[in-house]
Image (cartoon, rainbow, N blue to C red; front, top):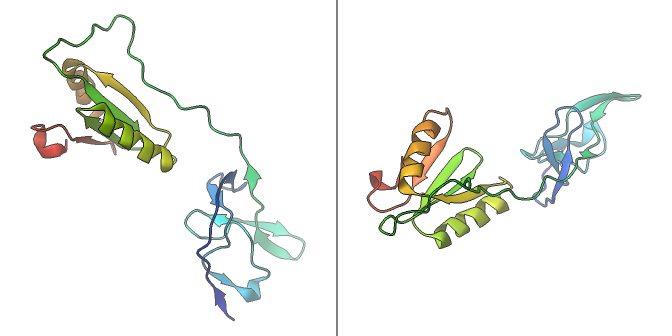
Length: 160
């Protein structure tokens, strides 16, 4: 038996019909030719799609297309929020996946937003007053698995 390994991949918006996890249009990283013909699709981690029962035994499932995700969402403060005081610089927040990044300038927040979008995290962004951010941070810090990174100078050495 020989093993085949391939690194060429193309990400698509399709899922495995058995486990509903995203898949890639790329053969599995490892495949034994004795199992049968090499499938064209695999899970994102390189494993073959989940097995299904077929007339000649089990075979990897065939992927299914899923609807495209909704358009990007943005955080908009409520209409009753007062603008920040002239001496208080706004806090720019970008959240995606389990990461919340805090910046003191919109350019850095924009770069993080673009990076998270490229990683398919569907991030959200917005700006708050320092007081609003501290109130939100207190409730967000209690969530399990959420990492808050504060890049503003003088704020807990960049991480919180």
